[in-house]
Structures are given as structure tokens and as C-alpha cells.
Amino acid sequence: MSFSANPNPTPVPRIDYQKLTPEVLDGLTSPIVVTGWPAPPRALDAAELKQWLHGQMLWVYERNAGDAWREWSADDFVDAWSAANANPGLNVVDVYLQDPRFDAVFPVHAAFDAANLLNGDPRTAHYRRSVVLTAPGAYTPMHVDSYGCGGWMYLISGEKEWELVHADRAARLWDETTQDYADPRAGNWPEHTPTWTTMLRAGEMMVCPPGFVHRVATPTRCVGFGGAFLPAGHVRRGVAVWRREQALGQAGSLDLADILQHVSANAAPSVQAAIAAALA
Ligand SMILES: O=C(O)CCC(=O)C(=O)O
Image (cartoon, rainbow, N blue to C red):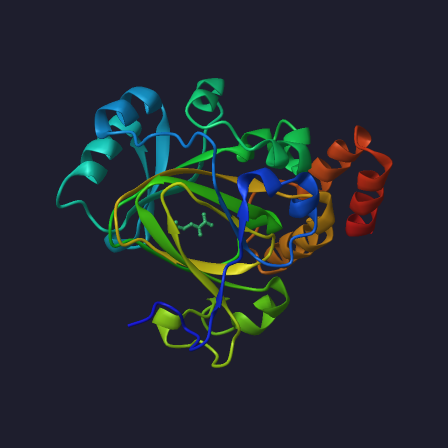
């Protein structure tokens, strides 16, 4: 059975690593998969992961244990996640790694560092890089990333099946009854919704533009990296998503308007104009 909720999904377009520029991120109108990495990081085994993440606390999504988030030490988590009978709900995504030592394993692509407004404020600078550790069988239902950010995910091992919907359709996918996005597995998915799909494989990076609705299924154990980004070309959408989260009482604790004002103080005039228009 196909993963897609749509009988004719569009394959996510692929671009070469060298073609990924800040301008591409600014102008994204669809998700993209970035391929052709010159020196892909080799797979890390459990012992190396423990060494690499030593001392780090991880927020773990335990979907099969009552949709709970739980804080684990990296050592304990890697033991549970790497076990042959790992709970298929175990999923670490969007756990940001502040320590510069993590750059040695996977440097963030220069295009993200150049385009990402979140880098310009100490409250969000660490959003630039996160770790991904997912057990086989995990499923993340349709959602939009917090604060209207876009997200990238690079897999060094394993694979993940993605389905994405354009941000312009997000409002139509909102289910007032559940106060959440409709999801094909919840049985409330509107027919005829155009989607993009792909199987993201080791050595590839998914780039999900700000405000795009997406879901992810993980058939095999995954190790990877990710990050959140908000380029000037999408800042209006990011602010709109954040204001909607606020109206719904679902916004996180960051004051995105204050952060963007702070970023604007040191930004180029064109970026200042984009931020001012978004906050007007
Ligand atoms: O990999 C996953 O299970 C979910 C990833 C995702 O949707 C996200 O980080 O926003």
C-alpha cells in the first residue's frame, strides 16, 4: 500500500548539494531533497553515538507510551533505541545541540547559516542544528513546525518516508474538532489534497519550507541531523504561523516578534524591510 494520501502525489524535486544557496532557501516554493554530498558522514554505531552525545539530555517523543515527551540521558536513550526490540515510538527530532563539538560530525550547510534569521539572536541561534534518532516503526502525524520555521533533515543511516502539503493549504487541513491538523491515519483527511512525497534515504537531506504541513513514517532505524530555519523570503509566513499558534493558545514561549526585531538591528536593509513588513 502506498504511503501517500493522494493517488497522484508529486515526487519531491531533487537538487545537488552545490546548487543549495541562500537564494534557493529564500525562494522555496516546494520541498526539495538535497543530494550529492561531497563527504557524507559515515554511519555512527551505538558506542560512537554515546561518546558523541555524552552528557547531553534528549527530549524523546514516546508515541506508543501515551503520546508523552520524556527527558532521557543520551546514554540511556541510545541503549533503549538501539535494542533489537526497541519501542517503535521512540523518536528524537528537533533536539537542538548547542555545543560546538557537534559541528565536527556534521557541519551545517553554509546556505542555511547564511539565510537563517534565527542565527542572529542568542535565543534561537542553537536551532540551527539538531539530532535525529528514530526507532523503526515511528510515525509523526501531519503538523507544521513551531514558530512557522522551515526544517531540514539529513540522514546518515536509515530511511524516512515524507509527505508534504503546501503552506497555502494549511488552513484547509485544520480540524476544528481535534484542534489539530487532519491526518490520513486519523481518517479525517480531505480528499483531493495535492501532496509531495519521497522516501528520504541515507546521504540525502529533506528541506521542508516554512509553514508546509508534513508527516513522516520511519520504516528503518535512523540516525541523522536536522535544524530549523527562517529565511527573509519566508519571514512573513513564519510570523503569520506564529500569530495563529498564539491565537490557538499553542505557541511556545519564544517571542518571535522581539527576536526578529533584534535580528533586524544588524541585518541588511532588504532583510530589515522583510522583517518590518512581516511584523506590520
Ligand atoms: O522524523 C520524524 O518523525 C518527524 C520529523 C518532522 O516532521 C520534524 O522534525 O518536523
